[in-house]
Image 1: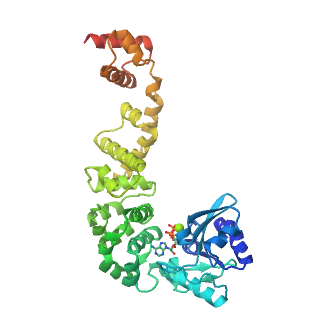
Image 2 (image 1 turned 30 degrees about the horizontal axis):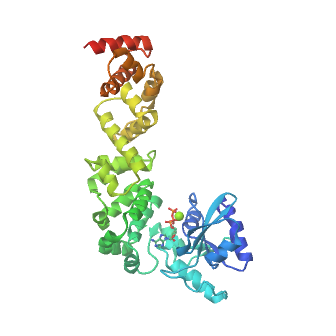
Image 3 (image 1 turned 180 degrees about the vertical axis):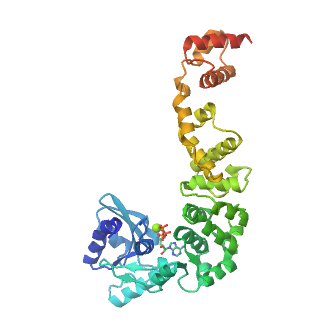
Length: 395
Ligand code: ATP
Ligand code: MG
C-alpha cells in the first residue's frame, strides 16, 4: 500500500470506530489503481465537520462551508470531507445504513468524471458505481451522468477534462467531447483563478500537447483568457521534449510561441502571482537575449547563475539541442565578484575622491565600475578603481 494511504489509515479507522463511515475517495483512488504517485489522500465521511473536529486533536477548518476539515496527523494534513451532493449536504446526520449508502452514492455522483468518482474502503475494496475502473482501462475521460448537464452545473469541468487528458494521456469520450464543444462558451463565467489552476496542471502534464489539442478541438481556447493557440503551435510543442521544464518555464515557452509582446500583461490576464510573473518575464527576456547571442559574463552576473541555467534549458528545448550548462557554470565560477556588495568601493568613496556633491552620477559610476570589473577591464581593488575613476572624471 502506498505510504499516503498508510499514513491516512488511522484517521479512517478512528472515524469508523466512532460509528461513522469513512472512505478514500477521488484522485487518490484513481492514482492508486493507475499505480501513479498519489498527490493527496482525500477522505469522505458521514461525520459532520463538527463531529470530525471534535474527534481529532489537531484540525484546521479549511472549508467548513464545503464540509471540509483538515485533520493534522503526525505532522501531515488530510482533507476529510462530509458526504455531500451538488450544492447542499444530503442527510449526513442520519446514521442508518440505508441513508448512508445513499449519501456516499450522492457524494460520488456529484463528482466530475467516472475515473474520479470511485471510493475505497479501509480494507481496500473498491466502490465503483459509474464504471470508473472500466474507463481507466479504456484510458478514457467521461463525465458521471449526462455530460451536457454536468458542464452546465460547473463549466470548469470541461477544462478539467482536458487537464486530466494531459496528466494521464487519456482520451476524452466522444459524448463528453461533443458536450464540451457545445458548452465551451459557458467557460466565460468561470473565475480566472480556477481556470489558471487547471491550466497549470494541464501544462505540467506529461501529455500537455494532448490537453492543448483538446482545448483547440473543442473551442475551449476561445473562452479562456488570452491564449492564441493554433495547430501549428501544438505541433511545435509536440516535437519538443518538455520533460525537464518546470510549469513556469512552460508558461514562458507559451509566451515565446504565442509571440506575446507584453509577457507581463499576458500573465496578469491569467492572474498568476506577481512573484511568478516576475520570474517568467525575466526568463522570457533572457531567452530572447540568448537567442540573439551566446552567454557572456555580464549577462550571467546580472541574471544570476540559476535563472541563466533555467533559460539555457528552455533555449535548448525550443531549439532541439543539448543544454550547455557548463558554459554558464564556467562563466559564473570565473566572475571576479558575484554581487555588487563585493565591489571594493562604495558611493562614499566616489564622493570623497571627486570632491563633488552626491547625486545620480554616483550610481551611474558604480554601475560602470561594476561592469568594468565583471568584464575584467578593471581589477576589483580600491587603488585601481580610484585611478580608473579619476581618469573617468577627467573625461
Ligand atoms: P490531483 O491529483 O491533481 O489533485 P484530483 O482528482 O485530486 O487530482 P482535485 O482537483 O484535487 O483533483 O479534486 C479532488 C476530487 O474532487 C476529484 O477527484 C473529483 O472527484 C472532485 N472534484 C474536484 N473538482 C470538481 C468539480 N469541479 N466538479 C466535480 N467534482 C470535482
Ligand atoms: Mg487532489
